[in-house]
Length: 155
Image 1 (spheres, rainbow, N blue to C red):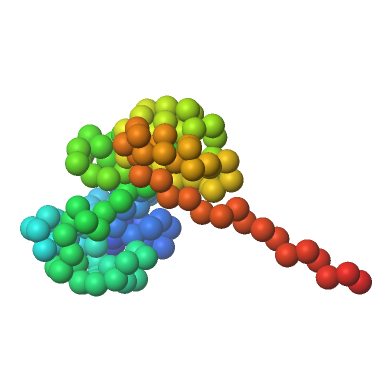
Image 2: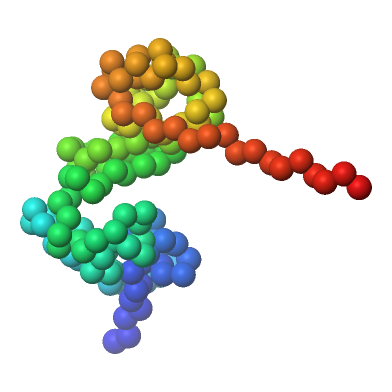
């Protein structure tokens, strides 16, 4: 009998060792999926190939030296993904990526609907009062500057 194994899921088609990669491997006809497990300093299992988080995250260090809770923020622009994460990991920090910042009331409503405790949005539209309101609703706020384009040189 020949079995087709999805190495880290659908490696090369999707980000390795992710639910999306595993789903793609199954959809592509794999009989089984190979994944990598590591143990954090606090004894939690995480799916990660490397012994360190350096290659696949913006962090650094050995998985075995890091605690799960302190190093994990799961983000998505899709509420249903965050709700799935919340069902599987009720205590996980989750962040809703909003892109452009809608009115603060909408940010609160969207984050509550996604059960997210972080709001990730562009800085345009944020005010100190708005951030204080988000904090008052239990949200941590991460903002980034708007992308700008250099003017074309005059010809």
